[in-house]
Amino acid sequence: MTTVKEIVAEMTGATSEDIAFVEKAYEYSKKAHEGQTRYSGEPYFVHAAATAKTLAEYGMDAVTIAAGLLHDAVEDGRVSREEMEKEFGKEMLFIVDGVTKLGTHKYRGAERHAESLRRLLVATASDIRVLIVKLADRKHNMQTLEHVPEHKRRRIALETLEIYAPIADRLGMGKMKSTLEDLAFPFVDPDAARHAAEVRKLKTQETESGLAKVQKELKQELAKKGLTTFRTDIRMKGLWSLHQKLKRKHDDISVIHDIAALRIVVPTIEDCYTTLGTVHALFKPLPGEFKDYIAFPKPNGYQSLHTTVVTPEAGIVEIQIRNEEMHRRAMFGIASHMSYKQLGKGVEKLGTEVQKSRFSSLSFSWVRSLIPSLMKITKKEGEVKGVTEVPPWLAELSEAHAEMAGSEEFVEGLKEDFFSHRVFVFTPQGDVIDLPADSTPIDFAYAIHSDLGDHIQGVKVNGKLVPFDTKLGNGEVVEILRRDSAHPSSKWLDIARTSLARRNIRATLGMTDTSKPKTPQKRKRSAGSK
Ligand code: MN
View 1 (spheres, rainbow, N blue to C red):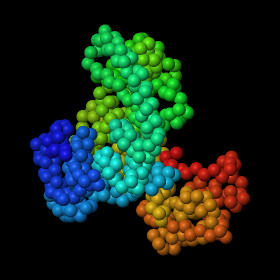
View 2: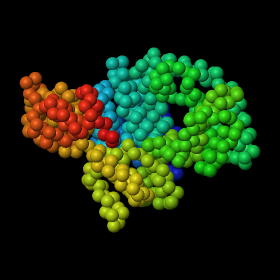
View 3: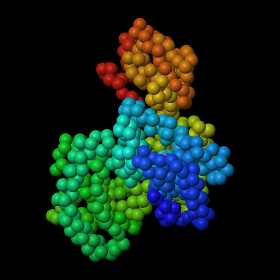
View 4: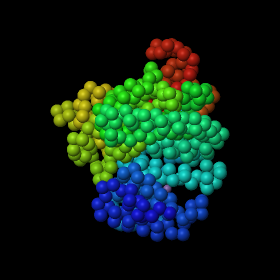
C-alpha cells in the first residue's frame, strides 16, 4: 500500500500547508473507504493512494493529489458532496465532481465514434486537472485489470487504447500514453502483444552491447566538445506503438530502427544542435531520417531532434536529442506546464518570462480546435474573451496563444476554431456524435449512416417528437425513426448544416454535385478539425 510518505516524497515545491492538506485527504479517504475492497480483494483505498502517487509524480498541485485520494469517495456515497466541500473546499469538490461526470461516458467499441467521445471528454472537463486525475485513475485501474471479471476487461482495455491513451498523447503526456497503451494491449490482442514483446526482446539482445559501446564513444566525443553535463539512456519503444509500426511495415523488422533508441538529454537548445553535429561527425546519418522537432514541434508540443545513424557497433540506431525542459514536457506534457498553484488559474499568473516562453512553443492544436468560435478578438486590447461554455483551461490556452502571437497564425487558428465549433449529442445507445453548431437531426442521421439519413420518417429529441429543422443542443439524445418509404426532399438542403448531409441529399435527389467531383458514396465521418 502506498504510504502518505511516499506520496509526499514525490511532491515538488510543496509548502507545509500543501503537505498537511494531502495528509488530511489521505487519512480521510482511508476512513471513507474502510471495509471496501477491490476486485483483487485488496482494500479499496489502495486504488485511491496509487492514483494520488501518480499525480504527485506528474508534478500536480496538492489539491489535485488530494483529489486523487478522494476521487471515488463521493460517487460511492461514502462522503456527501456537502461534507467534501466543508472539509476540503469548493475547488476539491469541483474536481471530484468532474471526474465522476467523465466516468458516466463509456466507450462501447464503435470505433467511428471514438473521436467524438475523445472530444466530448476534453470539452466537458471544465478543468484540465479533471482529465489528469482521470488518466491517473485509469492507469491504476489498468494495472489491476486482471482482477476485473473477464467480460469487462476487454471493453475497459479498448476504451483505454481508443480514448484515454490518445487523449494523453494529445495533451503531450507521452509517458502516460505509452503506459496506458502497454497496459491495455495484452487484454485487447494477446497474441499480437506477445509477438511484439518477442520482437522487442530479440532486437534488444541483438543491439544491447553495441548500444552501450556507441553510448560510451559518444560520451567521449561530447566531452571533447566541452559538453559534460548531459545524460544518456536507452529508450525502448512501447509495445503497442511497436505493434502499430510492425503493421505499417508488414512485419518487416529489418526496416524498424527505433525499437531501442539512444536518448541524449543536454542542458540547452544550443547543446542539442552541438550534439547533433557531433553525432553526425561520428556516424553517418541515413538521408531523409533527420527530424527537427525543436524548430517544428509536433502538434502536441513534443520537441526533440531525431536522427538515424549507422554505427559499426550496433547497426542502424535512432538517436533522440533534447534538453531537460523538452524531456520533462515529453513525459508530462500539459501537466508540466501547469504545475503547482498556477494550475487552472490563468496563464497570466504564471508570471516570469521563462514560463511564458514555454507557452510559446506550446501548440496543442487539437485541444485548441475545441475552443468554440464564439470568442471575440477585441482588437484594441488584443484580448480574447471566452464565452460561457468554454472550459476555463481551454480559454486560458487560447489566451496564451493570443498573447504570444497576436499574429496571423493565431487568427488562422481562430478561423479553424470557427469551423470546429461543435455540439455533442447522443444516440439512444449512448454513442456520442459531434456535429457543427446549429446542426439538425438531418445532419445527425447522415453522420450515423447515409441509409438512415435517406429514410428519416420522424425525429425524437430527448423522447419527444420534434420538427426536422430543430437545432440540436449539447447533451441531447437524438433518435431517428426510420422508414423505407421515407425519402429526402429538396427542402432538406436548407435544413442540413453539414456538407456530408447535403452531398448525400443531392446524390439521392439525383442532383449533380457541383461542389465536389462525383465519387461513389464513400462515407467519411468528419472528425472535426479538418
Ligand atoms: Mn477510481
